[in-house]
Image 1 (tube, rainbow, N blue to C red):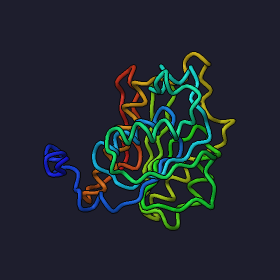
Image 2: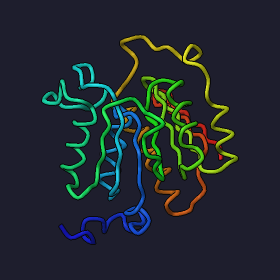
Image 3: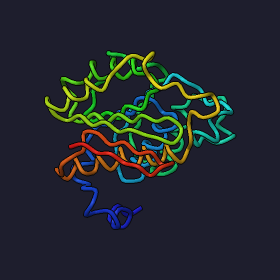
Length: 218
């Protein structure tokens, strides 16, 4: 496939010269992380690392977008297959484990895990070498996106972390929706493409899609 034709509709928005050499990790390939991976594959990311210890279950079909035929697969395996169907030239490493400090630190990390403790662990592991850290959080029909890219924003990100006991506990039947996950992933990838173009980033975005209320911070 001709690369110029493939990316012609986005060439002024997604600079291929910067994107093609970046290394990108997606920690957590569930509702948000799966969609981040597919979107990055679509826009031309070439070097992805996926990390998740979980398998696809029936409950992941409606809420996370996995296919019926993927039930029982490791989530990373299913997402790798989806990414390669979009672009079979991508270099993808997959780890079927929890995030470990021994994992290579990449230029960019999309944090799409469920637990606050995991977010804190991942951020501590990568903050000294990582260039851009984007954290997506979701509960049913509300989402938050935090972005860290400098010493000052690292400090503000740390202030957003709290214990899992303090986190909002949604009921089992109101935890996750595919439409909210898609919006969260889109906002995260949008932050990434703005960073590629050296545009100012929001360190915090929250959006309640039920009430259509949004808040942003620079």
